[in-house]
Length: 101
Image 1 (spheres, rainbow, N blue to C red):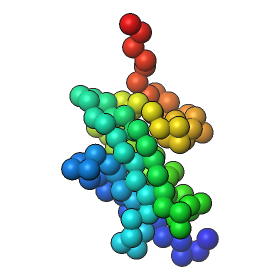
Image 2 (cartoon, helix red, strand yellow; image 1 turned 90 degrees about the vertical axis):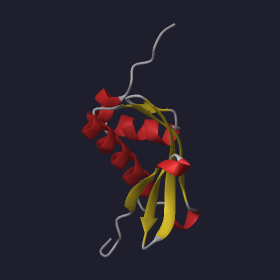
Image 3 (cartoon, rainbow, N blue to C red; image 1 turned 120 degrees about the horizontal axis):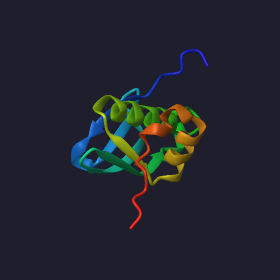
């Protein structure tokens, strides 16, 4: 749609989450846990009034691109985030291999 605002995404390390804002309002979040070289996305949530506007996808893409630039891996614990990666296989190399043992 014309005039549709792209979410602005920022990291909020104090809350361990990325935040997506549209016009200054919190539209969605992606919670994470960090380990050295790995970001585990545990939960993605979009506010009901912003559903269907690409907020979750924008959060997922931002996290993946940030990880890629930092040379980090991702652990897609959140089903939404895991599904986003399945739909965008270019990001598959960023997924950390499960450790057996």
